[in-house]
Length: 189
Image (cartoon, rainbow, N blue to C red):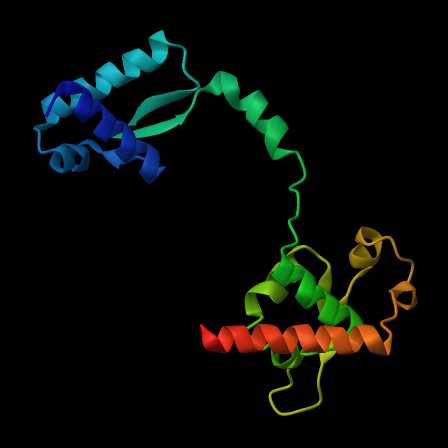
């Protein structure tokens, strides 16, 4: 292998591991002795310093770690403090709609309506604070009941659940028809 390949391999190892890696382990991975490996690491460190890169390789008691250069932290904090944008996928919206219109409702009831497992979708909605546990059903196993939150109302610009659009019979029939067609297509695949 050429020299630059060893440096690239070391860089990939340190980037991917995310934490410190012992010199011996790096040397074993690239099949060189510790002295040669340390030399390649030193070259990488020098290059990062000369180019004033946003990352650096530091030594910690015979181990090496790739990390952010101290001068860059103020910029990272600006990003970290920004609220994360929630993405409501079609699956999440479908699950949220079921909960909003049928609450309080169990996961099993949601899954019966959707026809697929809803664990991930319900968990995401709880994480986004759009849905929460509102109690437990008085049935074997005492399954959790889910309902919408105040955050749900705020996010969708409604004051109460009474303000949600009411579906008329024609719309209900159309939705049933679409669901049946989707179910048939899934069975054919």
